[in-house]
Amino acid sequence: MTTEKELSIDDLICNRCGNNADFNKSGGNCPECGDDLCIECAGSWSETANDDDPGCAICDACYLKQSICLEHTVKGNKYTFTIVANNKDDTEGIFEIHAKCLQSGKTSCVTNNNSVIAWFIHPIFENEEVEGSTFIVTDRSKFRELVDRATKLLEDRYWVRKYLEPAMDNDRAAGEWECETEKSDYADPCESCPHHGETTCSNCQFGGLGKR
Image (cartoon, rainbow, N blue to C red; front, side, top):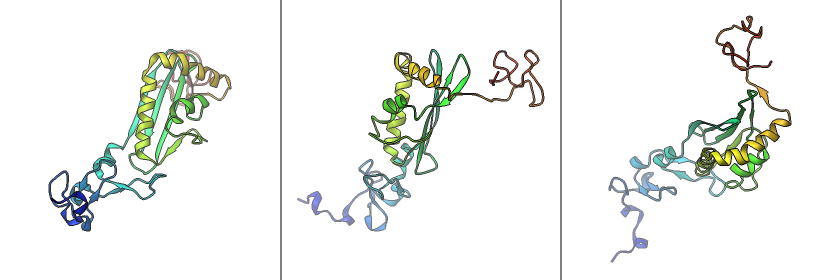
């Protein structure tokens, strides 16, 4: 009886199409799905460097499963929160969380807020420093985990109201939030709101959100 250890690389069969995997001609084993693959099923063997294996490569199907291009907005009682996540066109993924106060219209990218880091990022990236408003991730599998965690947390309305919104109140009190500067649908930059004499008016239907 032939055991798995006795098989040579020439005997390996592609787990997807059943043909010879032929590791001598760019076939191989995908560390993500565990399949032995021929080059046709593996594709380009996309490199997905991470701290554990800087040169690891996974099959194209797994690479696409880990690709994310997302802008997901959830409305709470006092704020709207938007997850911005994208690793589709690069080996690095970018992750941001934006918050907007519904009462004032002021916004901020709160990715590096201490509470956001503690709840969203550190459970997956322990002790990782988040220096700016954009968190950069090179591990694609952990990037997917981060986005899934963030989405699940924001969909929990009780948690948002009980914990996240009070944290945003404290952050906004620090005074670093800014008003959006959307162009009014009814006024060019040289014109003004017909009701309040402002280029952008946050108090009526004739303008976008702007400083009052």
